[in-house]
Image (cartoon, rainbow over all chains, first blue to last red; front, side, top):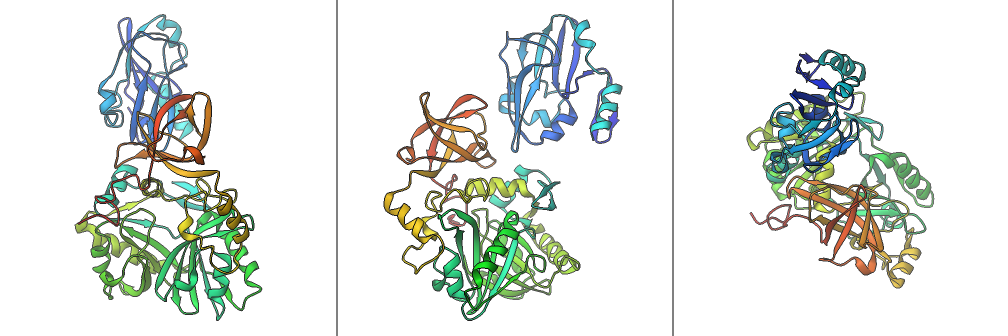
Length: 134
Length: 360
């Protein structure tokens, strides 16, 4: 769905810190939302923790830096990073151009998604949340 | 849009990077009406300005401009400014928006001993900056006077799109360009300013002009090594520490701050503003610490950004004088993590390829 100026794909889960989760079996692909990339604008560096790192839900898993500012990326789930999108090293603008596709950040092997899910939002809930902060 | 010194201003129109690159390679236009402006007139205006500013006003011929600072008695920078001599006994001073009230009051207070009139022209003159290698041909299309005759730091009167204007070949980007003053445009009657703005945008179309916001203004001035008041200079830093010696004329007769600056010059400065070039990924930001090695803190970052032209982080910092050496490799703590950074000279770019000294 599209809310205000922001794309919010239906089948993903979202965090209030503006990360998304796409489920693939026991694995999750995570990234930042269209809202997040539009707020940051012109992203020039992305840094995600190394493959093999353990991450906890809502704890820092990296940083994203634009010309004007720097923000932490909070992992929307708990698990182990199995793959990092290395394309972003040379092409950080992919985060601006395609936040839900080529701009994915990492693949995470999930520890207990049922537990993570309790604190995540559906597309509809995230859309309502965006309306309250815009 | 953000609030800046009481004005609602855009950080960008299209994006900081495309606007920045437009100025470095083509031409860009900035609305800088928010800046403070004062007119100083009277037989003693030169003497008065020599008293309140650090540069030598007596060398300014009519229709010339100079960069300068105003200092307090301790030699701390009250503000940096551009002073233009409109006529033998009439000057226009342009200073920072954030200091509008403070500077005007300072001028008025110090003018009492001189036979001069100080007039706040901030809200009656609109101001644009047209910057970049194609600034001159752009402006020429709507000017009735020959703009190519105006050399750097010279000024001229002209009609722009039929509107009475004053231009100076100055700017805050490092590039060739003009600052345009649209006269007789009180805030309540901005039509002439809008007319000139639109005419410049139209004239610049064939050169690929972009309207530019505060974001590109900051990245451009940083690449050029120019100070931002409040970040890189303030009342606790002196122009000597900031590397602005070229606007401090200690041979002048008494001026405010002279004694303190003379003393500091004799004793030697203890810290100096330097340029820093990131040697790895990451962007230095204000207030981050500069370290020589893990044991020795040597300074503090005052401005930092990603350089759209050079595509790496750049910064300005004050470092202790013994380390203020070009080529010295030091570290900056970016969110607690020490990253390699090198002390370099200003401007950050190759001035034979970019900026007003570029070889065509």
